[in-house]
Amino acid sequence: MFNRSFHNLFIESMVLGATLLASTSAHAEDRNLVARTANFGENASVTTIAQTPKIPAINTDTNVQQINSMSQVTSVSQFSDVQPTDWAYSAFGQIAWNPNNNSGIGLTYINAYQNRGAIFDLGSSFTLVGTEQANTPFERMITNSYGVEAFYKFSPRFAVNGFFGYTNAKNLAGSGSADIWYYALGLAFPDLGKQGNLGGVLVGAEPYRGGNPAPANDLSLHIEGFYKYQLTDNIAITPGVIWITAPAQNNDNQDAVIGTVRTTFTF
Image 1 (cartoon, rainbow, N blue to C red):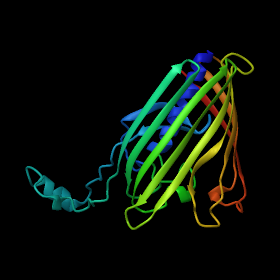
Image 2 (image 1 turned 120 degrees about the vertical axis):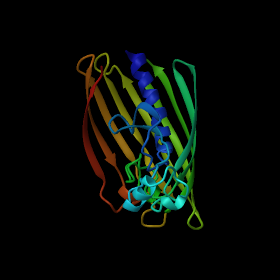
Image 3 (image 1 turned 45 degrees about the vertical axis):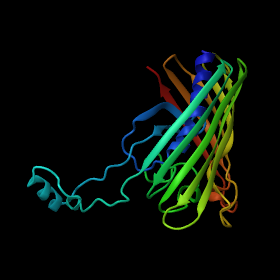
Image 4 (image 1 turned 90 degrees about the vertical axis):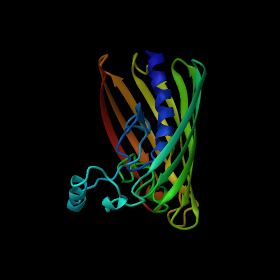
């Protein structure tokens, strides 16, 4: 049971770092590479690793009439509602190495084009992970993202896992660039209380922009504790608490405390 639980922890740490990197391919609607699960800690589930470019819809009556009256499309002018910036892409690569059953490390790189919306939107076009300053530094940008993820098992009852990521966003609508950072360190306690349970503590930072002008230039921390209780072989309940300091990278903002409960059904 421990080996399975800890393998899941490693996968979650690996995929989380990769997910934060890969979410730079925002606005993609098809998911061709999907992870089993990933989360910032144990509660906020995320599954997308890499995404494909969005294909804009052709939705005007004029376009429909033109296409229906021809045997084939012969001119891009028929697609008058499609703009050159209505697309996005990401190129994703990751290498993972497990020297033994007690340790593992992964390296991730992503190059992406972002034409609108939040960088870390996970395909929604809204900011879902990180601060607003980190998500929308520019309207159009090229991003290069780098990450490392790792774990080490000290004993059957205690392990450490974490990730570190950096994204450089280059402004395509003008000059300048933005440095974006994100990282976390987690402590895991498999089989805590009984076999199959899992306790965990996570401390880190969701994506934030470094060197941002005041007053939004403070470090916002993500502190989380959770406990997964295995009710049966197929059902687990995970209560948790998340504490966010300096929301929006501003110490003047009141800290946020969030309670969570997740029920997992495994078949």
